[in-house]
Each structure stands twice: as C-alpha cells, then as structure tokens.
Image 1: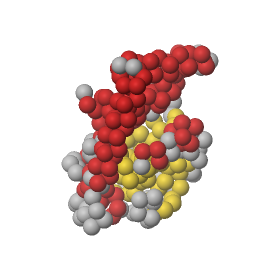
Image 2 (image 1 turned 90 degrees about the horizontal axis):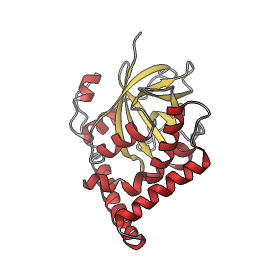
Image 3 (image 1 turned 45 degrees about the vertical axis):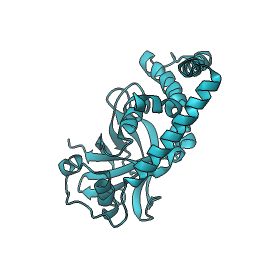
Image 4 (image 1 turned 30 degrees about the vertical axis):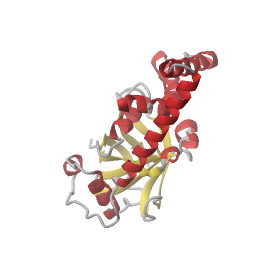
Length: 248
C-alpha cells in the first residue's frame, strides 16, 4: 500500500501519456483518443489525486510528503550500488546474473566488465529486469506497464549497423527508439554501450525524462545494463537488467 501511494506523484503525468498511447495501439492506426480525450484523461487523474488527498491543500501536503519519501528511497537505491571497491561476483552467464541477490554485486560486475565490441550488438536480444534494489518494484511497474505501453517489455532490437534500435514488447511492433554508440559512462567514465533515447527523438522518455541505458558485456551474447532517467538521478539511480542474444 505504501509503495502504491508513493508512485502517485511520480507516474501521474507518465501514466496519462502512456494510457493515451495504449488506447491508440489497442484501437489501431488513426483511432487515437485525440487532444480532447487526452486533456480529459489528465484532468481525471488530477481530480482523483485531489479526492484521495481530501482537497487541494491536503493533496498538496500529501504529494510533498510522498515526493520527500521518494527522494529518500532514491538515495537508498543509489547507496545500494555499493562502492567502487565492492568485489564483483564470479558470474559468466545469464543464469548467474539472474541468480544475483544483491544490487551491489550486479553493479560491481557491471563495473568490471568491458563494453561490447563496436557493432557487435546488432540483432534482437531477450531482456529481463533484475529485481534488485529498493526501487525494483517501481522500475518493474514503469517498465512493464507504462513504458510500452499496453504490453510487457521483452527486450531490444538493434539495426544491422548497430547505430540505432528500439525496445521489444510482448505485443505490438518495436518502439521507444534509441541511438546506440560506445561512449563514456556517466557513472564511472569507462566505455559502455550507450542507448540514448533523446538522440532518437523520443519526446517523453528521451527529451523530458532523459532515459539512458548503459551496457557492458559479461559474456559472449550476454549484456548487463543499468537503466536510468535524468529526471530521477540518472544511471546512478539505476535499474539493472540483462540482455541475452536471441538465437535463430
């Protein structure tokens, strides 16, 4: 219950935008809700927030308290990355990654791993979130319910030259595009495979929220990623995930 209440100020606008797009996907091309319905949806969300808070003044106080709580959880999630001296676990395959129980272990392994060979990531990859860190339930909710929307996230697909790509979902075409390149990490300065959503023109997730993924190669065909949004602390406030190359 507490975590559900905590999400209200964080995902209200994202939910309104995503639910609108979900309606467009569900009803097919040209059948979107339009500006009027989008405004109505946002107004409905805001009205619900007022009702839950018992009026504008109370709602404002409640939201302020929840935002403060969210800030504390973000700080804890960052602390759970562990320090630079945290030893990486012995792990050389996807099964080992999925069995990790500590976010500090995941980040330490990510720090110790190299960026993939330039251009060597083309094709489709199956994706899994690692349920690590205090904000893992929030990351799962955003990734599987709002990011698509209308379908669970299932991985990523890269162009033949590796310079661009999009996310895969259980239903619908690839979407949420990104630009891909090897670049310095925003966390430790070493090379990573950087996925930049703003550079691909994603208006909400890229330009507004500043989504960025940073990946390194743990084993051939296995990438460990840290995903974050500038709006909530960037890659420091990471959600770890795994990509495994799909085989024919």
